[in-house]
Image (cartoon, rainbow, N blue to C red; front, side, top):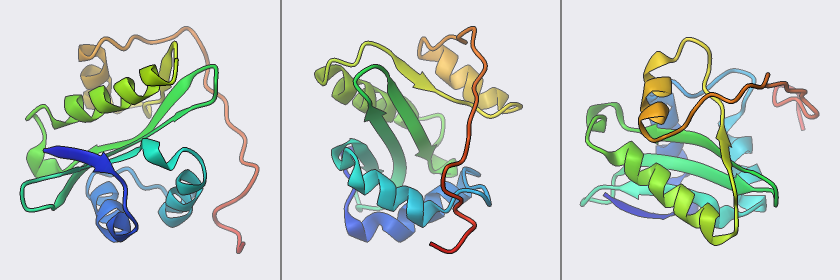
Length: 143
């Protein structure tokens, strides 16, 4: 797998990948999520492609000066268990470390035990925190 920055022509294949991986939720518009990422640190939106240039993975990373975050880590279901997720996470971690990021956070949905096991195998441990969220802009409302 080759890892490269996102390109505009990647939009539909990326969204199809996210759908295949079960990452999409009705309250998150993937088109808006991509648009928002391209406005802030677009170089940290990474795509994994195979030898035929088919998109087989993605990861969105970001750094706010205090902590780094990872979202939309995805590996095509038929390519899982072949270290591609590890490669994508390593690439994201490397890019964040270059920016001086001291700690990387991520969230895993409750019940996603496979994802928890994957991240724990990479050295991620549960933090003693409660994750809170508040929507400031609804993706369900016309913009």
